[in-house]
Length: 103
Image 1 (cartoon, rainbow, N blue to C red):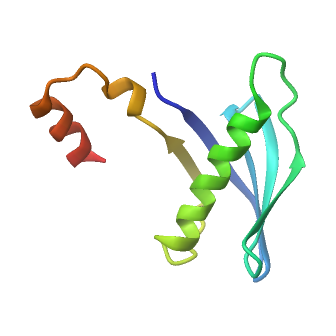
Image 2 (cartoon, rainbow, N blue to C red; image 1 turned 90 degrees about the horizontal axis):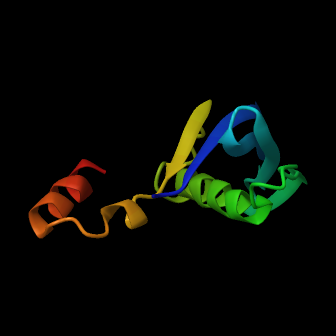
């Protein structure tokens, strides 16, 4: 099974962008990215004993970093972080190539 994180934009201006992040709409924290310094800050942690806050924060930060580096600083209103690594284990080489081609 892979990792899945939802991100919903709450605020954006020239200096910062703020997103809610978490495993679903009912369990969310808040992350801020300073666009000038490229530093991430946790504004609100995920408050749920069944979910690791650090796990979801790290993946939300990875997704926002991708916006900065690969997507020219475009921050969509809704995004996801999806990791298929664990889900792809055991696939035949031809199926694995097909899955990677889709992503």
